[in-house]
Amino acid sequence: MTAKIIDGKAFAAGLRERIAEHVARLKSEHGITPGLAVIIVGHDPASQVYVNNKARQTKEVGMNSFKYELPEDVSEDEVLALIEELNNRDDVNGILCQLPVPKHIDENKIINALSPAKDVDCFSPENVGKVAIGLPGPVPCTPLGSLMLLRDELGDLSGKNAVVIGRSNLVGKPMGALLLRDSATVTIAHSRTQDLPAICAAADIIVAAVGRPEMVKGDWIKPGATVIDVGINRVNAPEKGEGKTKLVGDVEYSEAAKVAGAITPVPGGVGPMTIACLLANTVTTACLANGLTPPSDLTA
Ligand SMILES: NC(=O)C1=CN([C@@H]2O[C@H](COP(=O)(O)OP(=O)(O)OC[C@H]3O[C@@H](n4cnc5c(N)ncnc54)[C@H](OP(=O)(O)O)[C@@H]3O)[C@@H](O)[C@H]2O)C=CC1
Ligand SMILES: Nc1nc(=O)c2c([nH]1)NC[C@@H]1CN(c3ccc(C(=O)N[C@@H](CCC(=O)O)C(=O)O)cc3)C=[N+]21
Image (cartoon, rainbow, N blue to C red; front, side, top):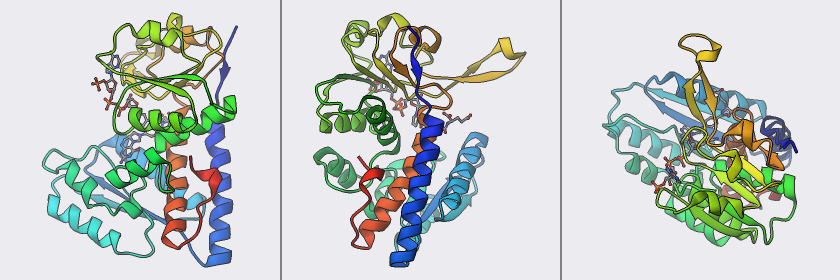
């Protein structure tokens, strides 16, 4: 058996088309153009590429993009003042501060300063709570993108055994909450979990969000299971030439693809969905800010 490859890049492109239609309707029927502000501190090249991609895709779907590139040595107070200014601007519906920030800036202060109404990463306790109990609002981008791919692949997730590996506030925990809302039977594994291979062997769905290159082995996977590989790890690739690197996921892709029913590749899987869901969340917060019901196809 060879797994179906879940094309996250293509799915994300389709999602962006739907987002563009909703944005066009918000403009023509309500005079609203959603806006997303992205803050980047310092000059990490990977972050730069990523932030530029977000800005380009934001404009492509017809939304306004505001980019703030702050120097590495900017003070915490200056970043907090910028967030406060953006919190108060009517043309900004989403604010994202690219993480990590330099060490002299307290990440928690940044997260707490963001207005929950504009918190498109879904970091705030208020928004995390809404996700847990199923109230409308932004949903963490990577889990939302992963859920969309799973629903598209499997339809109803009700009663499926789902194992999420990783319990971070960013990915693992909200992923577990979303799967539970869809009536899957959810196990969340982490670094203290005993006998992870046995737990995976019972899973119809595996979501790997560990940050360890190719940790999940092909022979852990139940034949026919659906595998969502969230991990993005840059590793050395001497086979490509001296000093070259490549991206791999948290799943041993070549072996897993022989056993799984369907699997996301890295790159081209969950990563592109994360950015598309950021845009989807900005439409959601723009609707909520204007007393409109957010489009159901852009949220969980
Ligand atoms: N595709 C995308 O868009 C995105 C991809 N990522 C990628 O996803 C991965 C995970 O990210 P993130 O959640 O932020 O990572 P974190 O480092 O915050 O969390 C990793 C989790 O994995 C668990 N873990 C570590 N080692 C093991 C082990 N041996 N067995 C089982 N569990 C283990 C940790 O357990 P414990 O809690 O006990 O320490 C922790 O809960 C990374 O590769 C990251 O780059 C992240 C965000 C977006
Ligand atoms: N406030 C904040 N929110 C985030 O969501 C956030 C963040 N900070 N900091 C960094 C991480 C990382 N992250 C990625 C999203 C998409 C790809 C992505 O699209 N990856 C491509 C490959 C890109 C490449 O080739 O380098 C893919 O998987 O196909 C990667 C990484 C979001 N993050």
